[in-house]
Length: 248
Image (cartoon, rainbow, N blue to C red; front, side, top):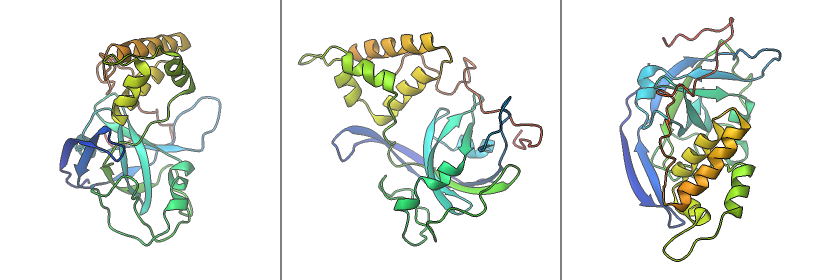
């Protein structure tokens, strides 16, 4: 079961003075089974879960959504991926629990979704949960969209192209200036659009197109299906025969 969430979206200036999308929401609570992905030829050490339909429906987007909250009481921040069917899935691995260990050393506190982005959830211990949840386990999550989207990691090939792009002029910014001016969420969309193709040549073409779009003043990738629902380009992993998805 999942709890009720109320979501508001506002455009505000962040600490750097850059316009950003600010989410305000109450937490979403649900349980889900950890599934082992089916990967041919090699074992994997990570699992994944699919959000229940009613929990996913309370999120602000059918595309990627960065959330923070707790899983079995341990805090995390991660980006939920679209499953191509209007829902979301989450990769669960050791890194998910390990990411905030060094900065989460204060006492346990309630889930607060109106806190500043750098204010992470507290917990009783900075130790990893022992044992780590495994495939087949049912875990309990409390999540909410982050107050402000974090800066995405820019792929090296895109960074190189932006650096090489012609510099803009007064009143007509170039690709580099436009990239710096758009919101972190918009940068994330461009990166998602660029990295989603499997063929290297398609990726290279999209990098060139992205630089051209930015130079022409476009602040989002044109005609990009962020949810994967229409072009069938996105999906969650396929679970192996030893784990089942009870959502559907």
